[in-house]
Amino acid sequence: MWHWVSLFCAFSLGLFGTVMPNTASLRVSVSQIAQVKGTVKWALYDNENAYEQRTPAVKSGSIPVTGDSLSWDVTGLPAGPYALAIYHDINNNGVLDLNFLGVPKEPYAFSGSSSSKWLPPSFAKAAVQVAKNTLIKISFP
Image (cartoon, rainbow, N blue to C red; front, top):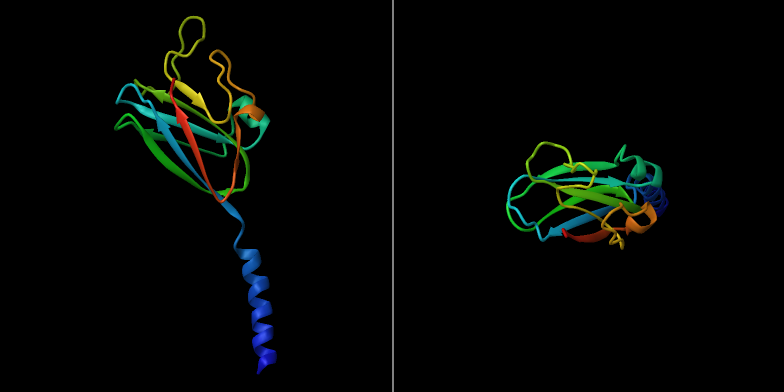
């Protein structure tokens, strides 16, 4: 009898150990939204090349702005470094509007430790190590 129980336990550990991957989740919290209209567009990148080219994002989305702050969850991610880029699409036209010099006219921000006003941070500066339950807090300038 114990032989069958041991065999069942060994089989179960082997089977379920490969079926349930180690996934991470991310909660994004955005504050200081100046205008309560439009949407916040976001894109999450897991490598430098995709981040610099702005395509393809691992995950992306659009969140309607209903107040001066908002938050959302991103689940099912493999643990590792990720960089998040967001912008407030105030007029809801689906693009980050630029002035005649190419400077964004709509608020934008990135995860990580960069505070550059004129250039997006590198992937290394924007990257955040995402583990089981990670929180990223971003404030629009």
